[in-house]
Length: 77
Image 1 (cartoon, one colour):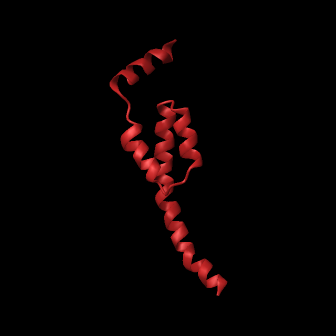
Image 2 (cartoon, rainbow, N blue to C red):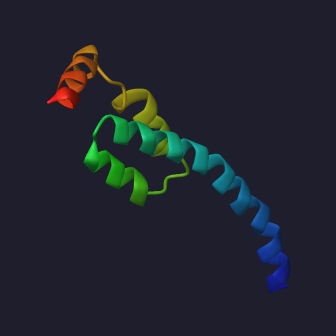
Image 3 (tube, rainbow, N blue to C red):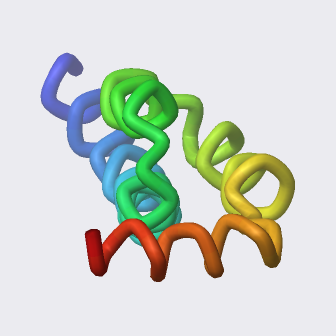
């Protein structure tokens, strides 16, 4: 009985990991590129089945044109 429940839900757990992992990777990469240390930590520690990761990618993680220019200048100093 217990093994049936465990293996019955195993595919669901695999599906959740397969869905969340790519989103989390992209969100963490973008937070690192944007030098958003707080967002990086939050995204790393909080698992919301990729909801927070997707929101960060499409809403909060977008760079502004001035940020890209300033970052290039910061890299040379």
